[in-house]
Image (tube, rainbow, N blue to C red; front, side, top):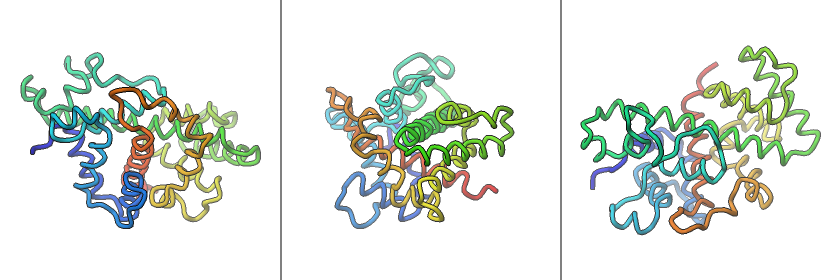
Length: 262
């Protein structure tokens, strides 16, 4: 059956470029007893199946779109400043759902590549905000000595990116400033935070391969703080898996997009 959503093809291409360890980390979220990494096609289908409502999955013969999964995650974590999936138009009178759903694009005679670009732009913005949210929760869970180191890292990254108020930045306020820079700034901050949490030379790869930061954030207290208690409403996916999946996918994208930048 042909793929119904543009964002799932983009997700599959990303997973094609993921390392075996990164795909294994994602596979273990889907199936904790997994001992080998799923292939990218199987992994993409399972992520999208997990993210969709069972009845809807049955009728469309496949899972939902990755953009829909992001929208559910953003909603569960109460992240503001992003358009909603079925909400107002985001591009030439089309909603997020309409720019992602192939049949809708064809019905409206829209250019698929143009819609794909809009979807990717939303994905990058949403994932960046999710990662910054994770860092905020991580900061809240840190001991006081770790917070001091973290604040120093925030100021270092802010200086690197020419932020004029870098000397006074700390905690959530610093994360907000750096989060608004997006892209490479978020990647740089993530790698710095990992060293703060004593993962040292393992760096960003430890996060994506072994989910080290994820395990720290999503402990019992962290999971409640991340909004995990709100996720069993009718029609919602099982976000206890979806949130970690999205965080790891976002981390993989960061690694692929920015790890070679000096």
